[in-house]
Image (tube, rainbow, N blue to C red; front, side, top):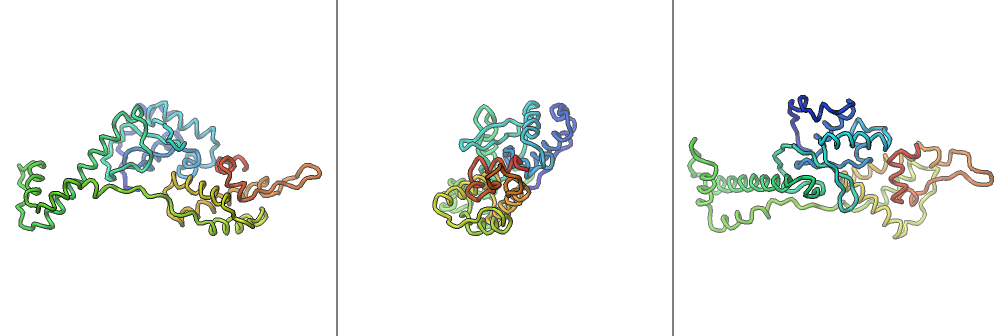
Length: 288
């Protein structure tokens, strides 16, 4: 995450001061720190509960109320991605993006009102200038330094004139050279997740056969979490360890509750936990 400066003007903002509770103000500040270069940030319940201090140990209803308060003040504008994830755009973010592409899904046009496209154009221009200057300085040491009256455009033209024809052709496609490719998640480490499940939940049902259907569900949950966190393999495994630790604190999921007469206490299994609805319920704290 890039370093970010929060300006003191925030304290004089009518929108910010219209928030009723200190937890809502703190949540907004932390969203400013968590947002990508374009002012986009996930606001899914699981993400907020894990990554923001005001939402820790809060219920889904409480978190929803805080997010709604920020939206009502137009401090954030919420939207849903095509895959169903919940995100927010922070208007008046006023950041000069370094990355050419947002980290999170681009909001609908009526949400951002052209701000993302404008920021991307500025980012491409910045990268283009840096690329031109870097190549000009590296290939032509005798280029005269800029004068105090020389404009930025004139400097670019001069640098372009000193480049070789092949370098000029490369400058014309410089955007393609610096665009950051969005990589997918690392392969799901089935064995490590199963090992963590057995270690942390020894009383739950053991995994005997990890058939293709079960692998498909595990891979789907892995990709679901990665869509919010963009983790590497080690960080992803650490998330699932925390997930299983949450399960271990539930008496119901670990068979430590009294069952109905003639029935055994319920014990969660890994396939049950990887079911999308059950997975979300555990994260939301429904079984704590």
